[in-house]
Image 1 (cartoon, rainbow over the protein chains, first blue to last red):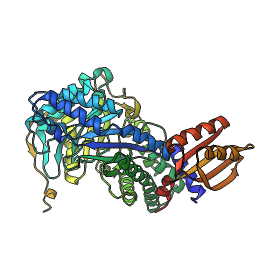
Image 2 (image 1 turned 90 degrees about the vertical axis):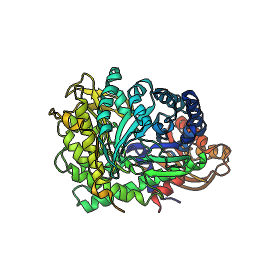
Image 3 (image 1 turned 60 degrees about the vertical axis):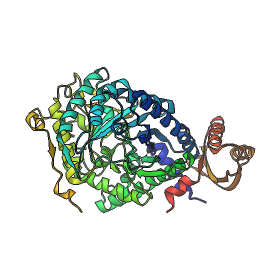
Image 4 (image 1 turned 135 degrees about the vertical axis):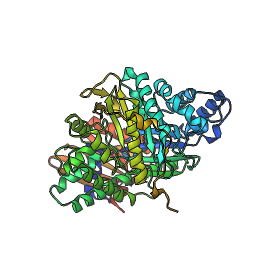
Length: 452
Length: 89
């Protein structure tokens, strides 16, 4: 029989340390839904999603019960809509976003990702239509998430798209001003976006993916934090080892749940995303892990090194626990979704420039950051360009999910609610990047793209 | 298919009896029992075979949880795989 201590340890992780499966995300290809007629295209999309994902939520709930582990989110990702809709004779894809929203609600999932365009090297007609539909799409739907990939190591950075995305983010914030610019929380700008990411808001189902697939995202900052409390004052070798062991255990949960769910749904199991995804709940924070390593407040000197080690140890521990690892895999540092990050930003220790440095060594980028409402589109574009450059040069995914909260100034707070949490408005540099952004064109791919 | 039944709560007469009667009702076979009193709390772990269980395991978990509530105990039923996955390579 199993060791009594092991059983209690697992239960303790779930009950007191917020161990959970963060999301099971079904990826669905919509490539067979293309149609010149917009209404027909929408009908095909709705029918396909509701057919493929009809049992997703029920299956997730059954597994939760049987294994006694919470599966917090059940979600859907689809083929980037700019590809699916490019044949449609229309100027706006808002109706497709609304169709995705209706299908998501019918299936009972809380988010659907894939209102996306991949424009790292240039924009097609369909890509421009999608990008320009984003503000209205975000304002008139609840569950739809949008993403745009503006750069990659192979292609460089599409600065025309970067410039446009600054304006689109501003417009999205303005059009959803009644909710503090909530629309921007569902919109990510990527460099090196991955095709099998189960996490929102950046999930989409890549064209290299199968017809239908199940991806899993695990979580567990609270478990790692708790484990580190038992190695206080010990050298980093011990800290790294402790994180690896914990990450292994967390990932095994994801592997088990993913395999079980994909078998029951009769679809292939894609990947486990080895991520430390925080929530606003106390005791479920990545910032607090960094502080446990000996930093007074997250954001002070030493934070980047601490995060680099954490990110690496999570991957090393997790990779042996799953037969397919993918997605973003690493530690997330969303400000509004992490209780410790919120506190650090409010104290003024964690600033935008430090967060940018941290994104060089963690899994994604500037995530869920509120900035003053009067931040210009050019400044937002410049922030995107900086992040994309970090991703491009380091061959990693980076992203920007930023909320220029209408009417808010530094020191105010933006309430997003639920898992999205609340974000203190952080200062940005006031000096202009207008002329830099206005140049447009494409930043050439770096020398490290030439690997052949 | 095996499941682990964990019962934790204030000790009293008849806990094992009540849990076993309920499990028998659903045709769940008890394979092993491990029980102690930890800091005044009754703690029991049972390895059970749920292959022939008359109801789905998810429902069994809900029903047993309800039995626990009535008796002021925490009773949970979890598939054994979760512990195996986490603690065995």
